[in-house]
Length: 438
Image (cartoon, rainbow, N blue to C red; front, side, top):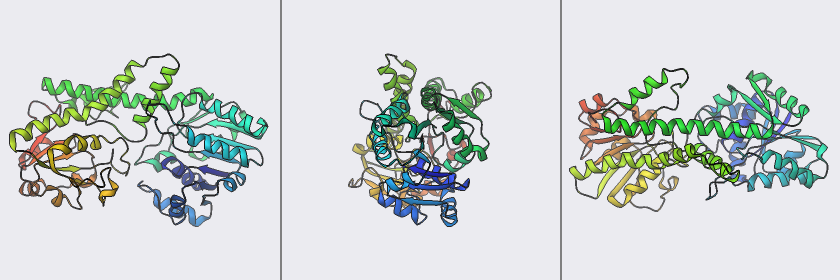
């Protein structure tokens, strides 16, 4: 099958590479010439474990190519995937300008029948709008069909998720187009759900919003555990043993971030509002997540005030919203830095994806220092905060850290460490909801 994937972000690039590995002839297209230049050389424009090797392999086979010539890419393929960004506007609604720009490119370049596959996460009703919009622009609705095919990949395991999907959702009005997509995905062997456009779109938003709800729910239980002297880690363990609940997404901490959960929760709330529906649960989910880092910070600030005068030196372990990605979007660690900055002499950031200050949101802030080693970050520090559970932080020698730090205090924002082990090393361990001893 000849396929073009428009958009070279996480979803588009991963989709293009994996489709090429399924023996399709694939063109990755984007107007960003710098990204295309990197991809042609086998360099990913983002961090994603394992994907670089598969990219290089597919380029060598000749089944995968990249271009910034969108028109040619459209004309040379039978199936066009749209995988452009749909960021949040200030009011929470999804910004569809990039999707419309691609639609205009398709309408101006179409030279035969195309199946147009919407991989981007879009509000309910978007695929129907796109079909009507293209019909008006092209003038011949028989030249295309639109299929909604939402993605369910996770940053940090995007390649695995794309190669081993737990379900493939295909929403559309054309049986012929659906059969073409089923043929494309047949080698993956996943369960296929065929539905209409609106249902496919809502499945994506409902899935991410439900997972975000689990995160915020356990974070509210964390607040109760903190007051009651209970251990939220064991609470989550007990809940997860119930097969109706499951253990995933029950890790209490400073909250969720990234490009999906925050954006999709906002967009679903906005869509519901337009339809005259009030989503009280999701509004609460958003509120809990927005305020969760502050609950952790309150405990640290109180401890610091009792221990040392301001301004403080704080080591921040991890800035990305999760490990195995360089994505900082909506990371709760950013909120923590911004809240602490006025009271700090320095905030020293160490993250394996960050080498220079211009890779942080504060390129000109002198108080923000990027460190290459844990020892550098801990030197004379008044406290450390674990924000991202990178593997490198599991290997810290805390007995040596105690000797480096001015005040050996750790705020564990991800319940990553064993409190007893850190206390035995001489660290004053702080967390939320880890029992009376914290």
